[in-house]
Amino acid sequence: MKEVASQDALRRFDDLWDFDDPGGTETKFRELLPRAEEVEDRSLVLQIRTQLARTLGLQKKWEEAQAELDAVERELPEVPDVVRVRYLLERGRVFRSSGHPDRARLLFEEAWELARPAGEDGFAVDAAHMMAIVETGDSVIQWNETALDLARTSTEERARKWRASLLNNLGWTYHERGNFPKALALFEEALEEREARGQADEARIAKWCVARAKRSLGRTEEALAEQRELLRKIEEDGRRDGFVFEEIAECLWRLGREEEARPFFAQAWTELAADPWLPDSEPERLARLRELGRV
Image (tube, rainbow, N blue to C red; front, side, top):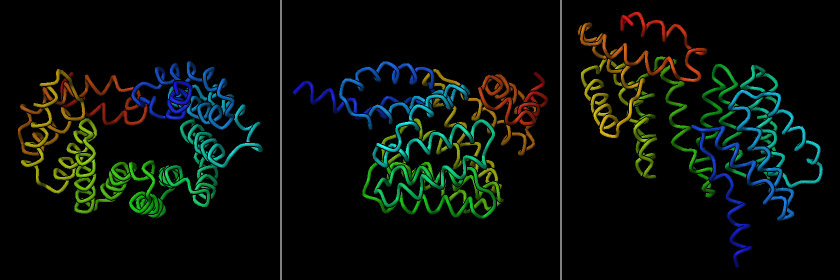
């Protein structure tokens, strides 16, 4: 019975993921691989290696990630479709993150076309969601809605758990296009989904998105009150959040309370300047925080 339980635990390797700590997750997967080899299940071993590659990609170790996927690719002719799908997804993610969206698009589309008839709804949703990320124009909304439709109708939990994330993504797409009422409705639905699943941290982020959409709609006092409530709860937990500081500052600034806003701009800059992605992706945003915070 212990051996069976051990094998079941191995097959739940996806539970080891901590996307906030890809380095720590890499270590867990490397420690798991020798045990997986002992089970003599190549599908299991290769799926773990695709996720190991993903941890490397998240750390911007592009060459190491590609080498890991090269090893998986050599065995693809003899493995189940689920391995092929996961390989395509992770190869595509590495190409996309390393600046090759066109190469990534072909892989994500192939993953979608393979996953659907294979009955792998969760990975099909993932593939459609990645297509939305690499596409442009109306295709972004179409792919997000395709993913959301499948997540809503599938009986597979791996697919259904995508609903809140997809609602959030679609909400931001509409927000970027200036359709703030639609964005707010999607953010509110995402919040309901997070709360129904008991996902406290994710629900906090969803509340931030709801308040952000309200600021865009001109409901600034309401947005400010909601962001201050988020700040209160965050401080109770002994944490700091640069995005909450930023939104409080922006709300105060819009309300003409510039001097009250400046300390929040300064705190936002201090926190967000240390973000691993923001300095490279949004330098102008950080420059604004620094200027208005008089840092």
